[in-house]
Image (cartoon, rainbow, N blue to C red; front, side, top):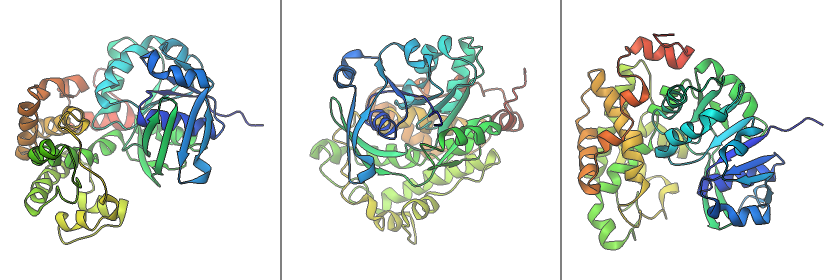
Length: 370
């Protein structure tokens, strides 16, 4: 019998628990790592996670080979390492993992947000990781899922097709081949700049949250986020942000999909403008707004999604005034300097590179000093 790929899932939040349980249910040997041992004590005691779903083949008890808060133990036997944590923790995970990684391992960020794989790879270099590891990123999280108890998770939906790219892109086919028995849903995303710049959360999440700040605080999120929260004026701001994102991608030689194209592709939602297309998306009905402004739509999506896109725009001569305005509002609301905390070009190692040099790096893995 063919030996199944050994997986380690890093992170025991909503997505991490769902992924670990699903992989276990499919028969893969899975190790679950979480930095705080107490948060996975119930899973360790039970030896796995109870998974519920409206899909019959995605429900049951997902057994785990090991549950640990020791990063060395977590990585020791892994062939594929699925990182399912907020993007703000990617650098920390890379730093912890660097001494323990070995040749041939694959690290997949689920998702990378903007520049995730690039930042992760730079952190490994900064910490003198000598192992030949392939870092890849998914464009979005493959699951719509929730944690429903200490050792329970629910999967609402598994996305049909999720673009994924390796760094460099020449390794993407190998990563897809390794993942295919568990995840045929992953498809070739081009390169990690394509997956990064097609990050729709950067456009929808921060602006929509900040533009509905008063309503969120007064109702504690008791309204439909995309339906009640998107009005013609709000949609025009989202359209402006989207144009800037697409223009930044174009400056790097990438043809990014527009928000309208994405809504049509992902949900078959169409309209004469973004406002109409959003309201024609049946998938958005029933989704409530965040209960407060202390939410990942700001503290993750602003520094890890919007800041690097805006920084690339500034570096290559694209005016990104709408993005700068949303970032500035987030800084004020959270009394935090997201420009400093975010994925700036120096943190990505791209500050002195030309467009050609950046593309040579993401496509072929060649840096100017190599």
